[in-house]
Image (cartoon, rainbow, N blue to C red; front, side, top):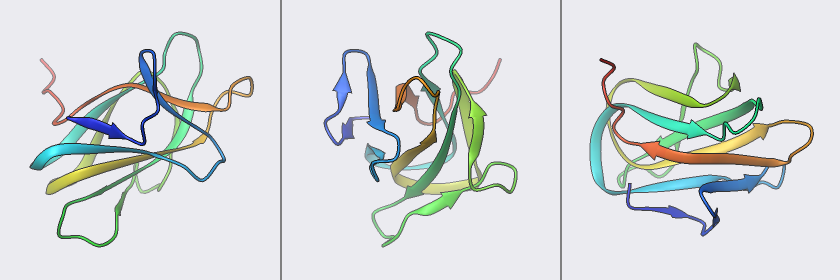
Length: 121
């Protein structure tokens, strides 16, 4: 990963406010053929998030929605998550949109993104 846009890195994490029609968009330094990536959701407490994942490459006009077990929303997720793209594909941008978080905090917060995901040992 080379940068995140919009410029919303605060201290040690990227974030956007849930419900403000914004998202986190990660731009890869080059198009990569990947079948998965990992993201590290804020985990300094017991919060969970619901979120949407979309990807595209430079040849696509629109983002492609990635589904979680046939559901377009990843629900009640926390800490490290491996996102499987259901096959190898060319990716240049990754868009993450927080849909629900803890009731005491309106931020969707991500500490890190690994692309491609490292294989489990």
